[in-house]
Image (cartoon, rainbow, N blue to C red; front, side, top):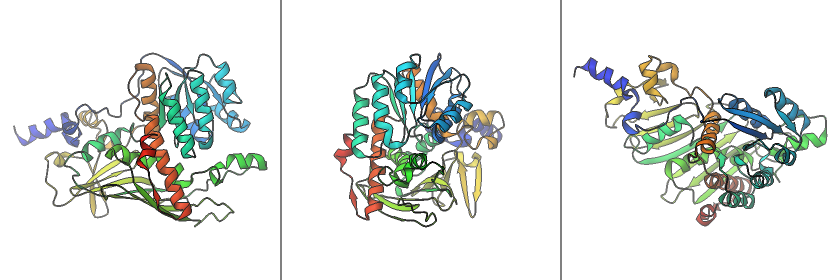
Length: 412
């Protein structure tokens, strides 16, 4: 075979990215398609509920038939985004009257999830519950217990396991491409406030539950939970202890919930995950990094890169991989659906996911409901990640080392 023939062969078979050689059966970032039609409802029409509505309307065969929110303004805003939808003021009304709805998406404030979740199961609905699942360990375990006894399908809204880029990168992590795990790091940086102003004091209090220390799990719980699950997904193991600290660095507006935090999560094998989050700076956004003896993998939700060490063995496919320059380093882009893009001459244009990660998470759940496929993120895994987030927030607030009881996660 000539070098030209070899290059053509590798491009056509997915060799431009190694993924096909490592995991030929991997499901890539294709459009979500369902077998049949399904009628669904969204409970909670805040920012996340509206995002769910937007992504559901991209999926053929899905009818958003009903929505509800206790806040009239948010309910009106949600109704403007969904054509021909029935609105309800409470989830109880929706579950009692929207008989044609098969599945519900819970996007209410974290501390309210348990009651809505149990009521949805009692109504015989399939349930997708946004993460974190709850604001307390007790509520989290109660949700997991309810899901175990349910005849319907339940899924947690953690998106790493449904993300085509993360699925692809995981095949590299589990091969010699990364090899020995050296360290782990995650961050969530966003210059924002978390405060929602309102002229009505009662409404302002309800809107700003994330700034209420009696209800909120802080940055580590609300944001970190999603990232902690990525490390659980890749490694199949959970932290044994957590240390942390936090402070208010920018938003000195009377809030008690820290706007900047850091935590160290230790694992039984001696590995460490360093986590940091802030509402005071946006540099480098949200990402996770696995450092290995052969390479590092950086994941940024819509993108992923592999950074090889200079002394790492060459595996052949790297010659044809798409690359991006990062200062003095070069990253091999981990591209979902590489084979199809390469055959169409569109490899570079397909570097990022064509849809937000939420789209794939919703699609996986709907496929589970309509086709009986396993859920991507079970409620039990969602509970484990949520509990780790709650305990990380506790370590940050108290300044104490928090031990993670394996029995607590095992029984989640």
